[in-house]
Image (tube, rainbow, N blue to C red; front, side):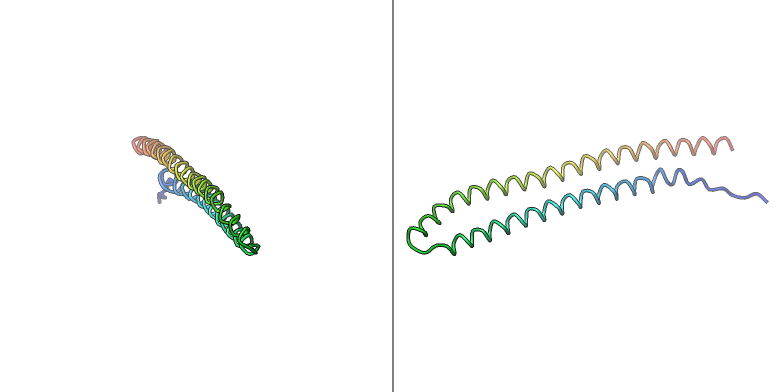
Length: 125
Protein backbone atom coordinates (compact mmCIF):
# COMPACT_ATOMS: atom_id res chain seq x y z
CA UNK A 1 0.00 0.00 0.00
CA UNK A 2 1.38 3.34 -1.03
CA UNK A 3 0.93 6.19 1.42
CA UNK A 4 0.11 9.64 0.24
CA UNK A 5 2.44 12.36 1.47
CA UNK A 6 1.17 15.91 1.52
CA UNK A 7 3.87 18.55 1.36
CA UNK A 8 2.80 21.43 3.60
CA UNK A 9 5.65 23.75 2.58
CA UNK A 10 3.75 25.37 -0.32
CA UNK A 11 0.68 25.79 1.89
CA UNK A 12 2.87 27.34 4.59
CA UNK A 13 4.60 29.62 2.08
CA UNK A 14 1.45 30.70 0.27
CA UNK A 15 -0.99 31.07 3.14
CA UNK A 16 0.06 30.46 6.73
CA UNK A 17 3.39 32.28 6.72
CA UNK A 18 2.04 35.46 5.13
CA UNK A 19 -1.06 35.35 7.34
CA UNK A 20 1.11 35.13 10.47
CA UNK A 21 3.39 37.91 9.26
CA UNK A 22 0.43 40.17 8.46
CA UNK A 23 -1.19 39.40 11.83
CA UNK A 24 2.05 40.31 13.62
CA UNK A 25 2.32 43.53 11.61
CA UNK A 26 -1.32 44.38 12.39
CA UNK A 27 -0.85 43.73 16.10
CA UNK A 28 2.26 45.92 16.22
CA UNK A 29 0.43 48.69 14.36
CA UNK A 30 -2.59 48.44 16.64
CA UNK A 31 -0.36 48.54 19.73
CA UNK A 32 1.41 51.70 18.50
CA UNK A 33 -1.86 53.35 17.47
CA UNK A 34 -3.58 52.62 20.78
CA UNK A 35 -0.53 53.85 22.73
CA UNK A 36 -0.55 57.06 20.70
CA UNK A 37 -4.27 57.52 21.27
CA UNK A 38 -3.94 56.89 25.01
CA UNK A 39 -1.04 59.35 25.29
CA UNK A 40 -3.03 61.92 23.34
CA UNK A 41 -6.15 61.42 25.45
CA UNK A 42 -4.12 61.74 28.66
CA UNK A 43 -2.41 64.90 27.43
CA UNK A 44 -5.74 66.48 26.43
CA UNK A 45 -7.34 65.47 29.72
CA UNK A 46 -4.43 66.83 31.75
CA UNK A 47 -4.51 70.08 29.77
CA UNK A 48 -8.26 70.45 30.20
CA UNK A 49 -8.05 69.82 33.93
CA UNK A 50 -5.18 72.28 34.27
CA UNK A 51 -7.26 74.91 32.46
CA UNK A 52 -10.18 74.22 34.78
CA UNK A 53 -7.92 74.67 37.81
CA UNK A 54 -6.60 77.96 36.44
CA UNK A 55 -10.17 79.14 35.93
CA UNK A 56 -11.01 78.21 39.53
CA UNK A 57 -8.24 80.53 40.68
CA UNK A 58 -9.89 83.56 39.02
CA UNK A 59 -10.95 85.85 41.86
CA UNK A 60 -11.38 89.26 40.26
CA UNK A 61 -11.56 91.16 36.97
CA UNK A 62 -7.78 91.22 36.57
CA UNK A 63 -7.62 87.48 37.10
CA UNK A 64 -10.34 86.97 34.51
CA UNK A 65 -8.55 89.21 32.03
CA UNK A 66 -5.30 87.31 32.56
CA UNK A 67 -7.12 84.03 32.13
CA UNK A 68 -8.72 85.16 28.87
CA UNK A 69 -5.40 86.47 27.57
CA UNK A 70 -3.81 83.15 28.46
CA UNK A 71 -6.46 81.38 26.41
CA UNK A 72 -4.90 82.69 23.20
CA UNK A 73 -1.61 80.99 24.04
CA UNK A 74 -3.51 77.92 25.20
CA UNK A 75 -5.38 77.75 21.87
CA UNK A 76 -2.12 78.14 19.94
CA UNK A 77 -0.45 75.37 21.98
CA UNK A 78 -3.44 73.07 21.53
CA UNK A 79 -3.52 73.67 17.78
CA UNK A 80 0.17 72.73 17.59
CA UNK A 81 -0.42 69.68 19.76
CA UNK A 82 -3.37 68.52 17.64
CA UNK A 83 -1.33 69.00 14.46
CA UNK A 84 1.56 67.00 15.93
CA UNK A 85 -0.74 64.22 17.10
CA UNK A 86 -2.40 64.03 13.69
CA UNK A 87 1.03 63.83 12.05
CA UNK A 88 1.95 60.92 14.35
CA UNK A 89 -1.15 58.99 13.32
CA UNK A 90 -0.57 59.73 9.64
CA UNK A 91 3.03 58.55 10.00
CA UNK A 92 1.89 55.34 11.70
CA UNK A 93 -0.63 54.72 8.93
CA UNK A 94 1.92 55.36 6.18
CA UNK A 95 4.45 53.06 7.84
CA UNK A 96 1.84 50.33 8.20
CA UNK A 97 0.83 50.65 4.56
CA UNK A 98 4.45 50.52 3.37
CA UNK A 99 5.22 47.49 5.50
CA UNK A 100 2.00 45.81 4.35
CA UNK A 101 2.94 46.40 0.73
CA UNK A 102 6.46 45.00 1.27
CA UNK A 103 4.97 41.99 3.04
CA UNK A 104 2.51 41.38 0.21
CA UNK A 105 5.28 41.60 -2.38
CA UNK A 106 7.49 39.25 -0.38
CA UNK A 107 4.63 36.81 0.18
CA UNK A 108 3.80 36.78 -3.53
CA UNK A 109 7.42 36.09 -4.40
CA UNK A 110 7.62 33.26 -1.86
CA UNK A 111 4.35 31.79 -3.10
CA UNK A 112 5.60 31.86 -6.67
CA UNK A 113 8.83 30.15 -5.63
CA UNK A 114 6.92 27.54 -3.65
CA UNK A 115 4.62 26.94 -6.59
CA UNK A 116 7.57 26.52 -8.93
CA UNK A 117 9.25 24.13 -6.49
CA UNK A 118 6.03 22.16 -6.11
CA UNK A 119 5.54 21.99 -9.86
CA UNK A 120 9.15 20.85 -10.26
CA UNK A 121 8.65 18.07 -7.72
CA UNK A 122 5.43 16.97 -9.40
CA UNK A 123 7.20 16.82 -12.75
CA UNK A 124 9.93 14.60 -11.26
CA UNK A 125 7.37 12.18 -9.85
